[in-house]
Image 1 (cartoon, one colour):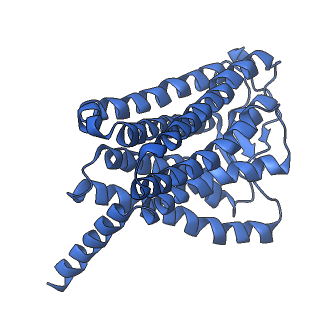
Image 2 (tube, helix red, strand yellow; image 1 turned 135 degrees about the horizontal axis):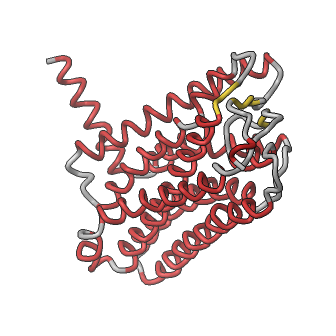
Length: 308
């Protein structure tokens, strides 16, 4: 199969073809990407510097912010620079690398969200045992999340490398992903499509069900808490449920459906590649007094050091 390859470079059609719309996308998405990097970077600094953010949940939040930056950076910078390119191209090896890192950071984020759900379950349902349960396996849970993302991505790339590409070489998308790449392969891709369906689609569904079930159990257990405890727990769960729905909705929509080239598919992908990473600092920061206070102290310390 590999000998049938005569394609070394791929053409990316992009999100829109209209030059004016592309300019509007640049004006919209560049500030969003910069805000993603800065916002999540501030959370990482705050978690590492602030002594008040020493709970395991903030350790997980710091790594989640790091993953958000990396996840967005696998797609958005190339997408933004391509907005002004007459011919949007990427090498086949570069395409495979983008697929690997896109799925690597995406699945790592999913697993970190599952770890954070478990952390909240222990904190709310078993508060007296929280320190004993969560103090030891914190680092192992983070490493496990990264390893899970790595092995998932290895499978995605492993099923893609043997595919022959003999032309045409145009991908109807704004970045490299499995669906559009399978469409230009010079072979029947039903089997690799099934593998992708299991590795991405069903994995997303089961992860979504696990997370939703976790928060349902947490909400059910709130009956035995005080009014103030219920209010705080509901606020925490509401923000995390929002993240889960916004992240998993588009992923399930795309990877559980047959391959298509509908415009709405590209728009849905924009939601979880461009918009979702900026929602992490907004949702987790604005609804968390400890994080907000740590950020204020961090910037207050910098201002004072400059004045001094």
